Structure formats: C-alpha cells, structure tokens
Image (cartoon, rainbow, N blue to C red; front, side, top):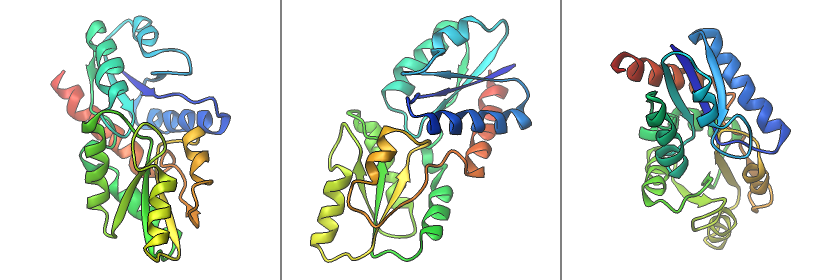
Length: 214
C-alpha cells in the first residue's frame, strides 16, 4: 500500500524543502511514500493517484479539515477508490508540538495562535479548539480569509497592555503566510511545525487507523 502525502503547496523554496524532508522522514518508517499537492505545485493529488497501480492511503498534510481537505483531496481520493485520513491537526493532535514551540520561545505576556485562515466555519472552529487546548491563554489570528487577522490580534493585545507577544505558528511549512507573520507586530514568531517529531508520529498514527479499516 502506498502512502500519498498531500501538501497545500508553496512557491517558497524553503517551504518546499521542509515538506520534502517531512516526506523523507515518514518514508524511513512507512515504506513507500509519495508526495503530491492540492495547489500551487505539481503533481496534483488527482494526477498522483492516477499514477498509482495499487491501493493507497491519502494523508492531507493540512492542519484543519477545510476546503482543500474536505473537497479537493477527499474528492480525488474517492474518485480513485483510495482511503483518506483526516487533516493532521484535527482533534488537537499537534497541540503538544505547539507547546514545545512556546516553551522554546520563552516567557510571553500574550500568545497569538496564527493559522492560515479559512472561510469554512468548521475549519475555524478546529483552530479555536486548538487555542483553547493550549496550557497558556491564547487568542487566534489568521493570515488570510478570516478575522481577526494576526496583526489585528497582536494590536488588540498591545492595547490591553501586553508586553512580549509571541506568535505561535500553526502552519506546517514556510511560505507566504508564515513570512507575513514576521510583519504582524509580535516580538517572536515560532517556526513552522513540519520538522517537529510529532508530525511524523501523527502521520503514522492516522495511516495505521485508516489503513487497517480500508
């Protein structure tokens, strides 16, 4: 069975490299792994599935079950008869990785959980649940497609008297959204999550559950 990892895609070379490295780390433990994309980069998930001869499990390398996960990726998987897992961050699976990032960032007067953003209220609810699960109070800010934006969230905290504001990156890889966080007014922006060991563990866990049911 082939494991097909499907990232969003980015034009930023550093982010592309981070996703390829994640795929290599998964492959060291999962056997045959291929990489595809929902947008921006090739191969598209539909094309990658068409090239596979045998059964596959599709894992969206996304943090919420937004449009790309529910429609693009799930639709392509259904058309190809492939099993598909939930998004990586669904159910708070990566809260521990965020906690590690915040610990490395040092003391903060306030935390903004910075997510990509979505017009889908279910996706936004998943992000809010992650913020609520953190061991420190955190407000949510979005890089696009939803409000408040990350700069708005930071500004609100500053107005309320916060000194050191840490922006906790709830993004998988470097890209346009992550780079925008460095212009959002915070004192520190944590790295994307792709290189955290928990991500590989989540991918393997999702694969085992869905693969055994396929």
